[in-house]
Image 1 (cartoon, rainbow, N blue to C red):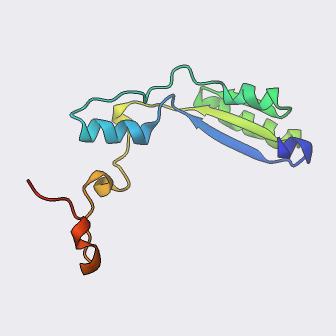
Image 2 (image 1 turned 60 degrees about the vertical axis):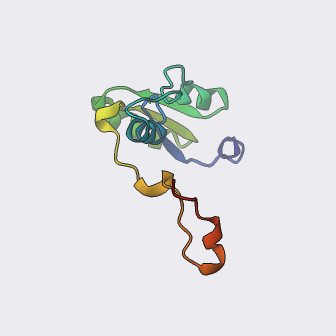
Length: 120
């Protein structure tokens, strides 16, 4: 809304895969291929939200539309959002950036060692 109010011709590209991919991948990896709350099929259209707030908005669902839509967005000279629908799903989810993030922390400084989890 600031870009609209200040007439800043910025273009934002929002990648829409209808899921929280990082959260889904962590759940798949750490919870025996089970996940919940990571599929977002009812996501709003970010292109429509942009239009509702006074910016230009395009939704691109086909790779062949990209060049034309980017040219239109640049040419319009107004704040714009390009919502790019991309493939989601398990086969395209990347490995977690920090695979160790869900491990129990180990404190190495002597003054904090008492905070380490006790091994069973």
